[in-house]
Amino acid sequence: MRLVEEGERIPLTLYDWDPKGGTISMVFQEVGKTTRLLAKMAAGDRILNLVGPLGLPSHVDRFGRVVCIGGGVGIAAIFPIARAMKLAGNEVISIIGARTADLLILEGEMRSVSDRLIVTTDDGSKGRKGFVTDALRDLLEGGLRADRVVAVGPAVMMKFVSETTRPYGIKTIVSLNSIMLDATGMCGVCRVSVGGRTKFTCVDGPEFDGHEVDFDLLLDRLNQYVEEERRIAAADC
Image (cartoon, rainbow, N blue to C red; front, side):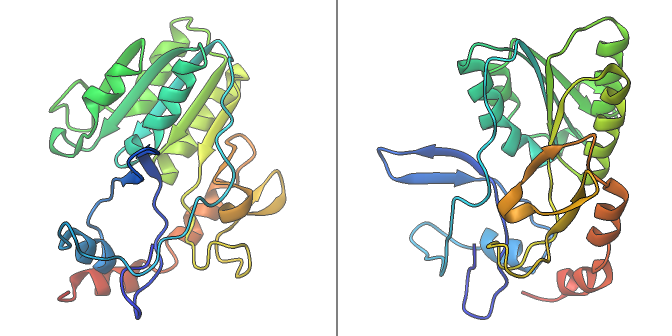
């Protein structure tokens, strides 16, 4: 998505869509200049460019029992996956989390597509206090058998979800949020290392086997422009 001619392109995941009505729905958080400008737009305003869908579709099948984990705005991205997994005949256990209750989104929607929903907040203001990984670890240590885990959220969250499931040998799929520029595989900005091989998130992903992702490299690249992002976010839109 690009709002204006001189603007940056930002990748956003579809939360929902209506083929008959010809609409798509996306959820975003105001974290920088572009999302702050987007938040100021009203019904009837025009977005300059919208390109998609990009990347590869989520692999949905009848696996058995699937644990869907969403953190922060990643809950918006995990929702259609959980819904599709449920429609495919899976038992869906969902874990969603946020820093605080005010930042928790789509709880009702996630509950509607889940056989069981666990809510966590870092500060304990809603649901159980702690991280989504704490809830996942309790389930697995309690003997829960999971056939697949799918996680979407901050990179550090997905890293620890993957490390939590690794000893159990549970296939774990993560949706990576690497920095993206052209989203066509030409620039290489979104490159990540998966299984020792370079992949482009925009065309090869965004979903990869979490046990093969080099999360330390991903986190280093995500932090590469923190100071620039901070300056722009502080600037007047």
